Length: 180
Image: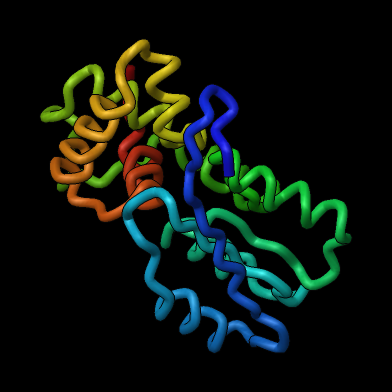
């Protein structure tokens, strides 16, 4: 993939995990078994998921850092659109799942053991941009800082909130209702 703002090639990989014929319990095991790299260049999405699957499976996939969820009856055009969206740093989940996380954030559900007191204002800004699906390059542009500075902030942020990847960081932010 070529970055729109430069001629530098960006190597990204999207792994589509085929879920054809999987039932709730075996699909949950598959989600928990697959490991997502924390480097931000390898993405995973569930593909061919049965239309009648429990919505908690999709929520679990989101919380585990998956970037997308494609049902078995998705059309080719919509599948291509979803894959492009994931490569553009966006998430591809159902409205129901996104509404679930929106409601949790709105309700202010927090975990008292985890606090954002140690996060700097810049780390909170970056965490907010991670939640909405921005890539490192987009964060750098929006905040007028270098790409490498963004990577350093994200590294420090992940260490402070004890998460391994962007998906877990987004979930942590939703649970703890980060205030800017």
